[in-house]
Amino acid sequence: MQKLLIVDHEKCTGCRLCEMVCSVKKTGVSNPSRARINIIKWEADGFYLPMLCQHCQTAACMTVCPKDAISRETDLNRVVVDYDKCIGCFMCVAACPFGGMGIDATEEKVMKCDLCDGEPTCVSFCDPKAIEYIDVSAAALKKKRSAGEHFSELMRKFVG
Image (cartoon, rainbow, N blue to C red; front, side, top):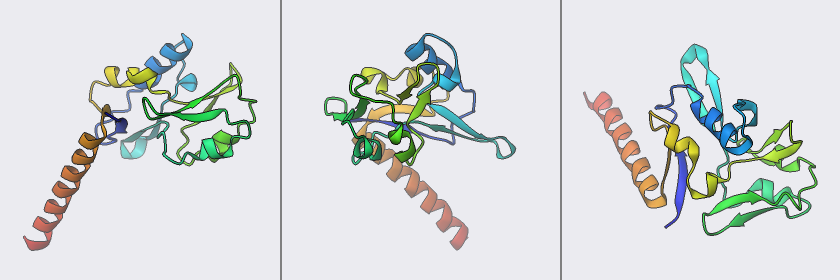
């Protein structure tokens, strides 16, 4: 069963707890700049968007890596970095269209979400359930339902 980490920005409160627990899990310190997830905030609009690696099927970071240090692990369908091969050129950071690759300035190396080996810590600490790690087919069904509800709402406005 393939799983997917999905984000519902409408549920995100901008509390940044996911950043804190991620940085503690991965580095041992509470420092959001070292987290593999980042909350992008538009305070004036009250809009918060958790951003992290999308584990793309055709990952730009993997394509540009000159040392083949980035690969896909099929067991969790995730994109991972082999730090023994990585030369720290940061081309992957520049190539990622989602900002999912970052740089840990303390360690001077790239960083990205690795799904916490199948049990993402951010998911278990996200109280409003803005981040979920669910089966791919369940994710598709959620999107279909959401699109259906949105379409129904538009039709009521148009007809009514």
